[in-house]
Image (cartoon, rainbow, N blue to C red):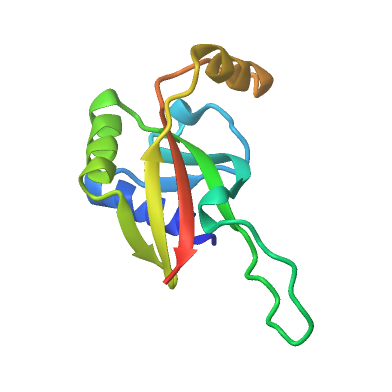
Length: 136
């Protein structure tokens, strides 16, 4: 499992007693009675800098990192707020030999509605985050 997913599971577990699941596709997250984590988008993490072409005899560049966008769903708003507060109190967490950084990333209402419509799911409150992992 990607270090960002592991870290997000740990943040959620520290804030709630609900079971936590990772969704591979968005279904009705409110029907499960769980905290649901949905990684919906992956981007190149620009914070790693630009990779340079290796010169003869030099080491190849390290691969670029990934910034993974997550939507977090919870059975109630109080739980969602508890998860948000846990992340805001400590937005950096070690996971799997990486340092994971979480940023709140509010989405435009139109993009959020389009995501729900594309998945044919009724819009519900959620938390939008971007997580990146940098090697220790």
